[in-house]
Length: 265
Image 1 (tube, one colour):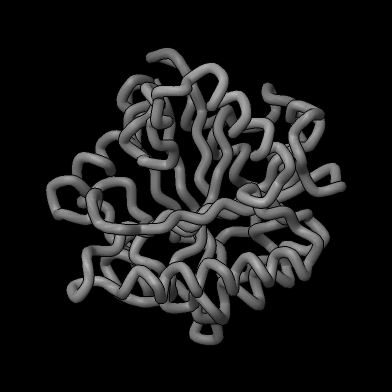
Image 2: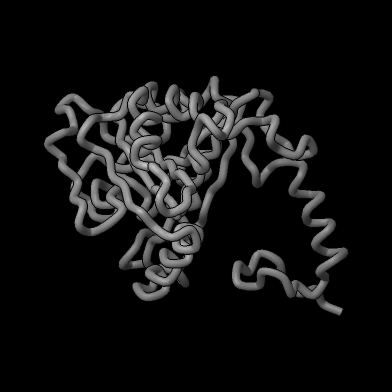
């Protein structure tokens, strides 16, 4: 079983401090799963409050959001794996007690382990049903050092993307020592994954693809100015392309993304 929890923050500094505290703790003293995302401080059902609750029965009480909050809020998402009969509620409450989230804006669900693992598949099913899956939606993944992520939040999340992107805006810390040392990462013990996962509909129902690409370039420029690394521009990409051509020349693997084309004979 999985105890799945989301809590909300109004200040990025509090979110950052709690998330980094959790990812640097040994697993018996922390959660089994730690991620997080940014959402718009509004009633927008896609980008705003409605993206946070884990079930339709749990509404988002926007009156608990302080009036002086900024254009975006932050959600820390955690989970505890357990067996039926374990006192997981007590353990979760103890671990959450020290965190700085907004009291009253916590959401939880008890789900099976397989159901938890397949949660993204359900999102794909919904996207296919509403037509957004097959529309152009350029995704962007960035790695930003911990020392620069606050500036990135201020310049990108609170400015460029303050109205949302029509999909998840992930941001959460990673520990460098747990990564393959051959991977190009920021020169910091802790760095952040920023993933902009757009699910816009086709134009004219959604924004023109060119506008999205230009916005991604603005985000990348902000990241590079702050000494972050765009995964698309890392030297690791060259190695990956070379191995793809060598071991999968007919592009059998992952054809749905249409990144690699079958080589002409």
